[in-house]
Length: 364
Ligand code: SF4
Image (tube, rainbow, N blue to C red; front, top):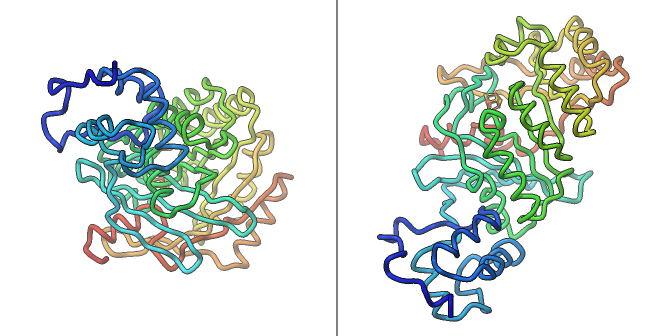
């Protein structure tokens, strides 16, 4: 039989080189079985076991012969993502720190919301981040490397394996700027859709405003949500708190968003961090209204989650509830829907980059 053609020659040289399968798309699994001299239908079987049945070992794959299961176990493993640390909040939020095969660490979060029956996973797309937002713990880390599509998708699978629950929504809002890793992120979205079974309308990509990446994503004409982390409407403040915004000015950015909305038929989400005395002024509320007036969008206000900088200082203050509501009323004058983000996991290091930093500093 074709599946018996696996030989010593095409086995990896050592256990350390075992190929991880979780997070691979069906065509990638087909390439894997082809390499082993196995027929194509074996890829479909592996695909079903990994994604539909959540198998964690080859031993569970009972429609494969014992010999094939043994061979697969010699050359492959289900996942090479290791759980380095897990924090569970009183509200049920689970924050994961995963170790990649090269020892690098990335964060992912599993959240549930009272108004949504389904679980949401927040994923990382890079190790560290080059954008350098001044209010973000990941921004303090700097950029290390892009994640592969497989490493992104396997975060969802690893969360499902650990929690025993199915993820229904995915947001690319963890560590990294997804659109500075656009090709791997787009590939991962397709694997989430076609292999993991997450509806494209349940996927959100959040960007700090990488115009070439927005244009690239628009070409795919996916039905996913694009969220812009605007954070400040005036160039001076925006360039100060989101340094990469010096590259793409507001008119160019707004045009890219409008094109995205036109091509994909989707409303944009504008994310706006509220920093007391920095981004919550009346003038900024009016300027925000000016920029979003003609854009099909909704606005999500995010009260600042205090984060220690490497110098050990908290660089900003969180606005009072009154100030948050005042800014909300200003933003509502646009006629757009304006929400204030419901926070999860405030008793753990749930803000992006916090768990990674705390772990690295040996706090955990
Ligand atoms: S907020 Fe996002 S884009 Fe900005 S530094 Fe943090 S991870 Fe990067």
